Length: 224
Image (cartoon, rainbow, N blue to C red):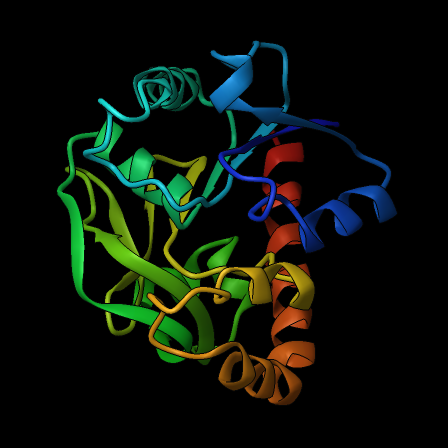
């Protein structure tokens, strides 16, 4: 299976998911939409990852318009799609939902609960009904019209739109080294030392859940 990974930053790519894809024999193509423009067609599944940009910053980042258009095409065409953090926010915005400041910047692990629909969902349902999810975001999304909320926490954590498109606010793809780069400046609510201690305690178990979620998404993509 050919999988496209759309990135907005070299510090926020497929990371752990790239290992899963390689282990399972899938082809991964990384596409930097900032410099490469509109993603090409011809992929069996698409993942869209995070970044330090935000919905509403289209003047500074005009490629956001290309991303919104691509997201709508993928959803309308039934391409299996997984948006993570900014990728989930751009998906929500592209489909008519409100995206904006979360009220507080989330940084670390937060209690998260699957909705009844989330428990029954073929992708989110592989996670425990209650778990701690890693968040790193100052913005969040609402569910678009017709979407199904799948997980709740300090913000809406996940929704599905249609049968093949998922948006996540949390980060199931993280690896230690790239997460620590997100907290190097003084604008973040937790220091690198605090984040490092949290990762020492919780990362191994979180990555195990991340692998399960990634494989559940790939299994749904293979079902066509």
